[in-house]
Length: 68
Image: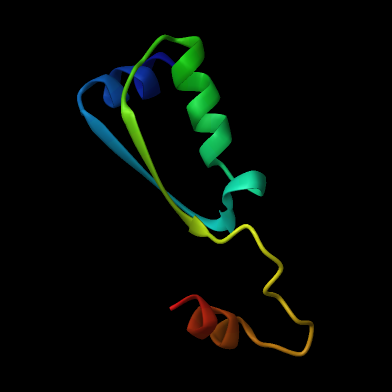
């Protein structure tokens, strides 16, 4: 954990890329860890929208096309 925190401290802004939605992804976990260690950085989430887009008849490629 110390290594992760030290890496985060090197940057003013952190971009979190996650294929999941914010509410079910890694973004809130990283946000919580940084808050617990009092690391104040701008966090920018790159996540899927918080809405149901998956339809069981669609392929991964079709979902990625919807997301842009």
